[in-house]
Image (cartoon, rainbow, N blue to C red; front, side, top):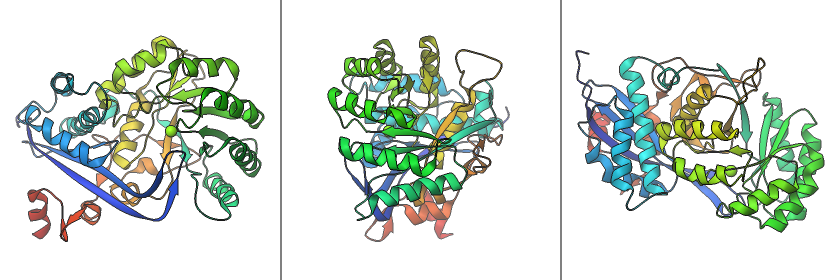
Length: 398
Ligand SMILES: [Mg+2]
């Protein structure tokens, strides 16, 4: 290559969208969406974008801490850089936010590599094994509305009307109310749409068994995070007591976390979040690990179109086991709750749901355009000034 391919700059942004209506789940309430994204530029002038899942301010500090180990490195050597970052953080953070910071950098480097080589990320991962992926709508969070139950059913019907073939609702508000909500929602959407439930680890084993048995008649495709992620043995016991598939893993980090999850036979489906579990480099290894255990993989995806695009390319590349002529469909999580960052920051054909499916992009990198106006609109401001890197402020003033 004639042009240089070294990493020239790394810039972090904290973006925030204050919600019109807050919503909550079994753990806490959301009144805003706040996310840290990272922009990596090569000396060839190409740009890659990444994002980290978790508390934005700490991820930003983590990325800034790791920046010296990435600057001036060969931008194409995603795995080499990943290895350096892992080694430099291992003594302090075998899991948690520093791994999210590594993830954000790694996703940006994959996007950048695709832009430099003018190839889509799915091809760089090894190839597109499927062009279409079924998005499932994530929504049906709890609200403070008086008519919350009706609202949940209306929301579900809205997704069905938009062509979604699968959706996931929240449980974890209390066993009896959960059962009622699931019953009403299944009645509202009818028998043909896949329905999943997610407790965000609200229950102990006894409660989780009680809820699982009670909702078995409503054709639940998986029960996500029924129990605290620390209790692997309890997950395994729950699995033995219900025929509803059990899923989890959005709180696990690195292939080592998933090795524990898989070896304990805790789940039927693992759900790594690419933007916190170690980026695309580590997600690929986790996918290999899942295939050795014969366990399905449906990534957890939350945040902006950057995270969604990373998940789409990853899913298009994963192996489904066992192989067969009629390959099973793969699913991608598509958060539908209020989020201006997700809706405005990026533009991508992959966000279009047509006949209940999305089509994986063949554009270079992760296949989205970043909207600079939205970046400035949502960048958090200090004393009325956008908290942006100086280079961005100067560019905006021109
Ligand atoms: Mg979840």
